[in-house]
Image (cartoon, rainbow, N blue to C red; front, side, top):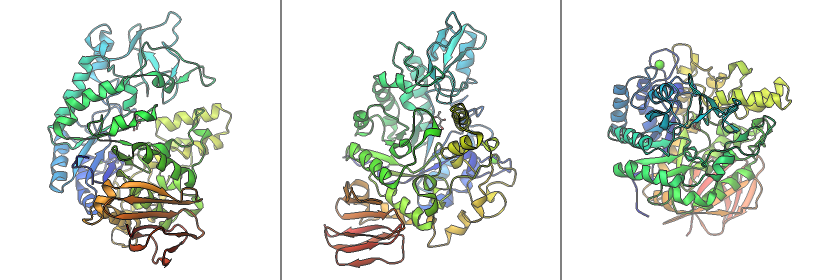
Length: 557
Ligand code: GLC
Ligand code: CA
């Protein structure tokens, strides 16, 4: 495999609205990110993915872009972004922006022009269809955020398609003019010195044509868009073209938000010369989701989690690199999801960190994860901002749940759990803003915050720092980045273990329960690289793991 500049890196996702507010308006901003670059550099991360900060009406928190060539004044200016790229560069860090091109905002100029003249050039940038005689939607697809995926094109007798919010009209990738516009924008940014992009919702760009209705899957008479996506073929042609005309020319890093319908296609996305540098592994986050809605979710157990990780690793093997996560801005906090609530503590949080971080691939850390930030104790649906949670709440009510049950069921998965302000210190508003934060701060910031952890060698923050440093270690880095992954003791309950085999042999092992567990090593112990507990109980090859103990050991190869 040809070595790439990004292989050994660790990435960090910033949700700008909630990261750090530099001017007291309650909204995080780019100058705020610049102020915190030293914090990030000290942690050791090198790739910073910034969720959208382009001009946007914020119908979906910036994933609805009205100008691809600028920065929203709430977040700063284009000059601030250029300064961020330069300041990051001085610290050997690169910036990734979010590429949101399945759809734009209905306030984008293209859409405005399409409304003025649906049959003109910009009409061809969207999926427009003449209204049915009876006024019903063109197809029966349910948008991801609920309701029909079709709405009236204002002032015309056309409808337009929006897979997401009605303020997010889908762009028509079949149109070569649209594709050229997208590539032009990507190159414009890359020429500014950007390291690359995280690519949003990209599987949705290819629709099965001709557009048609499918079997309804709920009582609303609509069907999930995935029914159509399952039939769509040929997304690769677009992605290959984009790759050749943009990323490859700049040796840029690209990581796709890819929910592939056909698992066997995954290698095409990540192999050398594939569509992207990497794609996120969402197998843990997808586990337990039901077609009925969030209220019907099945909790994931440690055994399920292990299985998800190993299956994903097996599919990609050494063909390419997955991007591994435990959370992001669309998910609840990883520690609240993957660890039993009654066992949430410093050790168990460290264990989860080790287990996902040492997988083959690129580790991504979402802001606040390094502090062990937890789900937000929202008390009422009125505290929720996220469009998706609000919709799922209605779905739960319609399914017959009481208000209380509906609230509880959607809070488990609410995207707002991860969107509460970053917890910098134990002071007012967690040091995030001197004003009124746009979303309430988690009350546990008095205990969980950066200031308390940065100088504490036993903190989760310091532990993440150790893990990040280990990826770059001159002796072990090669094995951690390029070594193969082999599951061990797969059938053991509440135990997750795997070898990383390269120049060295490493064993990564974690005991997902309070009770001890013992194992017998298959070869001799050499050294402990990571341990979330004080000591190690070992006699020869016999190892006793304390509750929630996690280790990275070097073994005799
Ligand atoms: C992706 C984003 C999510 C957004 C959606 C529509 O899934 O991560 O936040 O709502 O795309 O752009
Ligand atoms: Ca601000």
